[in-house]
Image (cartoon, rainbow, N blue to C red):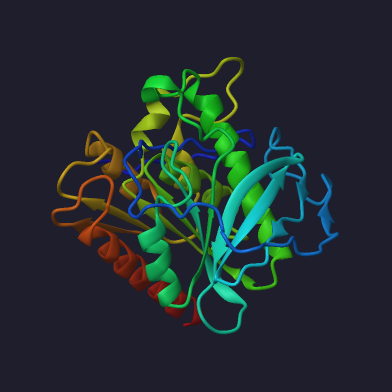
Length: 304
């Protein structure tokens, strides 16, 4: 397949990534923290000027997140975009930070707890993990795809941007080592965000990403994000690993992954035998292992 030309990307483009991920969570999401929690004192605030977007149309404000106190290593967190609350949590490994941190961009309508097995495995290996609910994450009756998928993805991109910007307020997070983990539709979103935030993100972990969705994105009004994703990917200067399975993929047609592999300048392709789109069960640990191998190799290469 001919390599796509790295065409200059207009400043208006942003991401389009999503993927269906409606199955039950890997482990039952814990009901809200049962122990008494108190809000940590914080007065820091990011103004609109401080978060001046690199691309026109990506304007928003970010307030410092509220991190709750908890007796466990998992702390409930409230992030903010334009004063709107984004519910999340951060799980720390044992020891003293700051920690290298993975931010999870969930599949379509994924909720807190969906990736709990992977969170546990990552923290056991020394990484902090941030999970959050996209503001548009509540599934409609019948679990139908959004009518205006382009606007839906654009909104998730802004949420992920806001969470990334919030990391500087959390002292336990090593902001020099931020990684994006994106599954299904969240893989598309993470690809856009990582490509447009290369100064903040060290690498991308793309788990069965829904690149095909860019072809079917529509908009209620004017286009808010690009649907031509491969020229955008060609401008990505950070490394990525694309993980899929042999037993069914939401890539739908293999050419979507083929084109992504052609476009990304630095990407590794991993196929897990027997894994399906949801990457649960035995595949869950394999995803963690292969992604950690990738992150370790990126860090070694950077130091070299």
